[in-house]
Length: 178
Image (cartoon, rainbow, N blue to C red; front, side, top):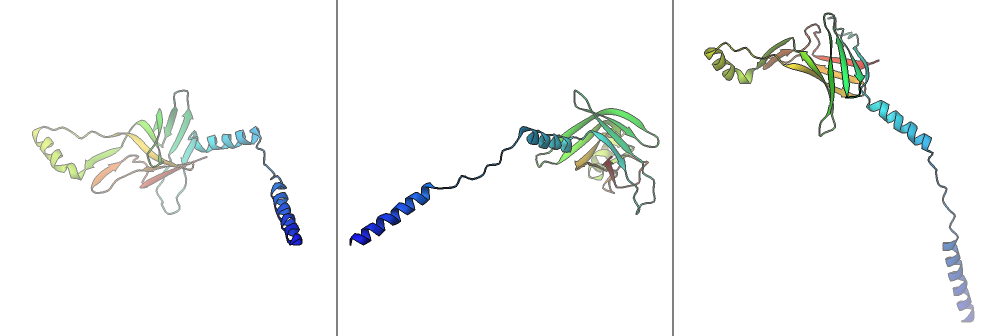
């Protein structure tokens, strides 16, 4: 029985010593310069500042030369919008929806054509009978912003007829950052 007790104590001792002799894990130290470099890259990815231009579309023969330059200011962003016949300047707003979708709104650009929503036709008819009030053409062009690309839906359909930039015949105008 003495040998069993001795073996038992030896086994317990080995077990206790094994638990206390853990090898310390190697730790990875992060330097502040690595973190600030990563932070700087993230800032640049989120910046909308830059020049955006349309690219040639091999499937579309119509010419569509549009450029938007977005400039960061102390108060937010400004834009310079250029087409063949337009050269406009104004304020650009960056908005984020609840779902995280980003939209850039170019303030002060009047749409080229707007006939309105056909669902409101009855309201429009009664207005036109009582007085010749014309429908107001919307102002401001919105563009979704995804990974260095601005996308403008340029025209609607038969139910909601409009054209934002008549010089470009594309349904969706994609402006890609240089």
